Image 1 (tube, rainbow, N blue to C red):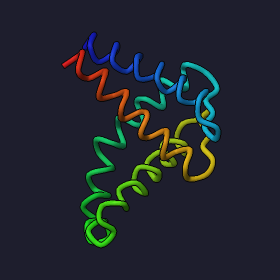
Image 2: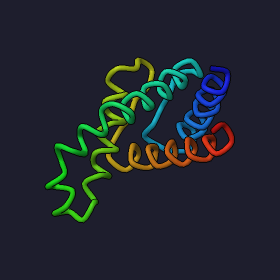
Image 3: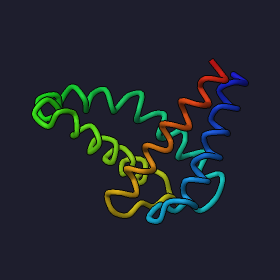
Image 4: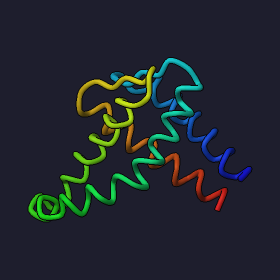
Amino acid sequence: MVNFIIRYLLIAVAISFLANLIKGISIDSFGTAILVALGMGFVNTFVKPILKIVSFPITIVSFGIFLLVINVILVYVVEHFVDGFSVNGFLAPLLFSFGVSIASTVIGWFFD
């Protein structure tokens, strides 16, 4: 349980950093960053697999590039449910999802 809390706090720090780095992403507070981290974890665990199955034919035809669109959609889903988190455009949420994914992977190396 402690590892879970530390992991998501570190991911929230990464999210705050990414929001300051990427134009088009804004987060009101660190508390909002924690909610975004939890929201991203939720959608990546439960929503993304469903979207990948449903969009499988499009993903095959696009040689996997449609998965980038799915990542952007997931960031917009989290934006819809978390007050104080706003996203603009296509490139900003794409870079944000890459950054969160990389941060989660690196943090996971230390807490698994």
